[in-house]
Image (cartoon, rainbow, N blue to C red; front, side):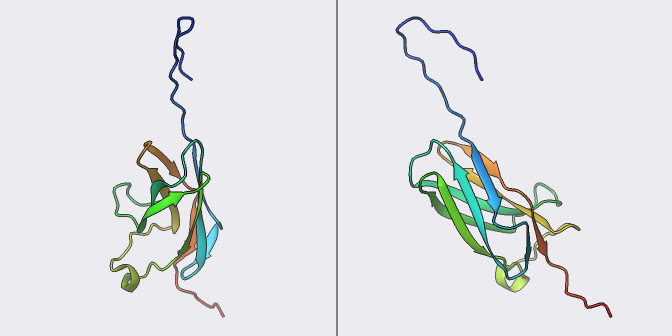
Length: 133
């Protein structure tokens, strides 16, 4: 919180911090599952535009995102974005960088005002299914 002084009868301008809360609808998922990416903010008008980027948690920070969604908007400071996990090379057109733990998060970026948020981690079972016997 900033400290400031004001003369009596003056106008005081205050900038509000806009909190951004982001979370996956589940903590674990399989390739091909339908999930929801939830975004919640405060103090923003309806139809504020934002974008999402899905990233692997345990790869280099400068790595290319797994997937991106733009052109989304908030209504009542909330948005639930349905998403299908299809990260195979034929669907994305590229091979994704995945760490050893297969953990992913998504980033929320609002341009005006410039605010940013990050989701919790999602574990995606990308390993081939093996039956022990």
